[in-house]
Image 1 (tube, rainbow, N blue to C red):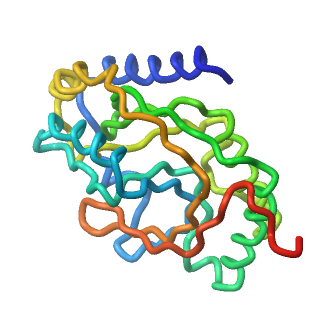
Image 2: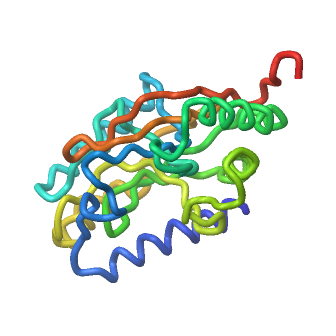
Length: 227
């Protein structure tokens, strides 16, 4: 996959939004219960200039039906794993070891963050430079299969659409209002995001926000000692 295909995927998402009348409530989707905890692989943004640039992009999104993400909540979801109550601590550790073994064969890379887009459930920052990220995701999926067996979560490999969420919809707001705010940001350039690790997190919802605890940080391109 190259830039042409990535441009086409982002354009299709934008056209899909333009064909809608209203946003959809993100918080009532995805089958979350109040006590849910879910394990997932994330890329997380460290404090610094990229965060500051992204926060500036969030400023025009001050609509009552949008919930902007806090700076320390900005992330890219790479791969869901399972409910935290389904996986004991030793197995979580084994997932991290197996992931490190597979990601040791790859190399750190950079993603380009450029242009604001929107889906039915929120506003997102576009991501370019997918191929090395797709390789990381394949390695993580292989690690999950090796440790937990062949049954993966429902997010199919071919359906992966990398993005960084900027704001989630909390109700059925008018799409035209979102388009009016986002159109001027479609070509906004944030910068290059250097990715040298992935985070295994235990995710939960706190009100209209996601919160998580870091369970393991796995480097990319670093062999296991003695491996």
